[in-house]
Each structure stands twice: as C-alpha cells, then as structure tokens.
Image (cartoon, rainbow, N blue to C red; front, side, top):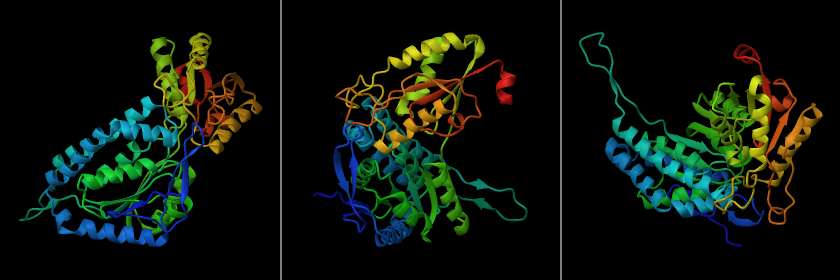
Length: 403
C-alpha cells in the first residue's frame, strides 16, 4: 500500500501517526491513503516554523518581496486549476463546476493578500511630547489553520495567504475526509519557492492531530472552520493559553422572500443558497421565510425547480447535486428529515436516498423541502449541513423580526 507523505516544514515524509484513507463520496472507493502526524511531527513542525519565520531571509523581506511569493503561488494554482478541480471533486464530491470556481477563488485569495501585503500601512500616532511614535504590524508566530471538508483549497487559501502575508509560519490541519488539496497546495508553495519551514500540512483527525496542535505551547494563534462544538473546545484551550483565535462555525442562515420580489430571481437565489455544495455550507440558506401573500405560488414553483435538479456524478458538467461527504453524514441528514416529520412537518419533495444503479454506491441524497413547522422547532434551529430546507410563511416584516 502506497501512503502519501505529509509535508513537514519543507520536507515530505511519512508521519508517525496511523495512516488514514480518503474516499470518493460518489462511489465510496478509496482514492488515497495519507500519512498522519504524531506528536513528534507536530513538535518538529512548530519548532521549524518558528525558526523559519525568524530567519532574516524571511523576516527582513520587504512587503513587495513577501508579496511576490503569494503571486507565484496564485499563478501556479491557475496553471494547475483543472487538475486541482478534478482532484477536489473526487475528494469531497462537489460537482466539477463548483470545484473549478473554488480553485479560482483560491488563486484570487492569494493575489488579494499579496496586494494587501504591499499596501498595508503603519500609523504615526498623535504625539504627546517631543518625539515621534510609530504603530507597526508584526507577525504573531506559528499559526494553526484547521479546515473543513466542504471547500478545500479555497478554505486553505483564506487562512494560509493572510498568515504568510503578515510574515507568519502556518501549519495546516486539513479535514481527515478531504486532505488531498492541502497537500497539493504544499506542493505548489514549494515549487513557488516559499522558504522551507513556513508551511506544513499535517493530516490527521481533529481529536488527535487537531487537538494537539491547538494545545501546543508554541502555537501563537488558531484559525478554524468547523462545527460549533469544536469551536467551543478550541475557545476553551485558547482561553487557558491566552491565545487569539478566529472561528468560523455553524449557521442556520435565513433567506427572506418578500411579496414584491422578482420571483424568478428569488427562486434562483433560494435554490443556490441552500442546494449549492449539497447544503454542506455554514451559510446555506436552510430557513426560507416567504411572505404569505405569495407563499403558495412561490412554494409550488420552488418544489418544481427542486425536483428538476440533476443529481449525479460530480465529474459531469450537467450535475447540480453531488453526493454528501460520507455515509455517516448522509445518515445524519436523513435523520433530520425524520425529526421534521416527527415534529409535524410535511415533506414536499426529496428527503430520500436515490436508488438508481449509478447512484447507489455513493452518498447521494435527494434535496428536501419541508413545511408545516415553526421557527422554534428543532429542525429550524439546529444546523443540518445538508440539502434540506424549511419553508416558513410570514405575514409582515414586523412579525418576522419579532420571531
């Protein structure tokens, strides 16, 4: 069995942790076995990261020189865009049109922070004596970036690019369900000439690798995208360490449709808001509030449009709905549909596992629309993280805001 190495401070090596398999959600076939980090690997990555960022060859770079590294990474992402997009749709099941957009977003993120690096200014603070006082920005240290499986490479770019632009070293802990894009980003950064030690990619589970990185005394900050329970655990450790954190956690985002809307545009926005990424997004519009004056006709058209969404192989450019990340997650999403019905909800469409032969081995789930519940129900309040939307009528803006 070939095990892909991890990237430890400029060195590709077999980690000391137990290897993990990553599977294609469209077929559940193993597409790679990846090396994971041990505590010794983590200690080495932190130590070498601190040394690399303190090395004068990096520390003394002028802003435009540091920005040049980010520009080169962006250019290489664009060069390898199709390869990266195809790998991502295998690793996390998103349709190819979405993964292409995420790769383009990653390149744009590196370009944005390259520009920010060049244009960021310090301040001359108001004098209170016969002297000049300056306010300058300094790097924090080693930053741990924990990313989730729903938007690999775009999420990694949003954490790595600003940290490098500020002069820090970064250790990426990608999701155990989609580690391949972070490793590809490491390959690109190495080719771009990023000094060894400034970037490490350490796959592993959140409970082991993630927890060890967060608790490490040499880590200066953690930026994490993930669930609320994980965020609370990170926040607790950060409080003990007196360490800054950036947490992007769960959501239960509302979409509000007023009676005077352009219904065609509203339908497009609602459909994209909840069903892009198969609803596996913290900003998925999973509660759809619709003004009662247009509720019946809007829902009728929404149900028709939802039923018409094309579920299929993420490799096809016609596919609009791909598989969910794992069987376990699909079962969780299906459990919320059962909960909604137990709470008195009416399932208008979807909410089942397709039984077509081409879809049977994957983690597919038909997009679901549910009505008949109120905004205080568990289905309305708990994040489902899947293609399930609750339809909620309202009479006027005041009543809606009052809840």
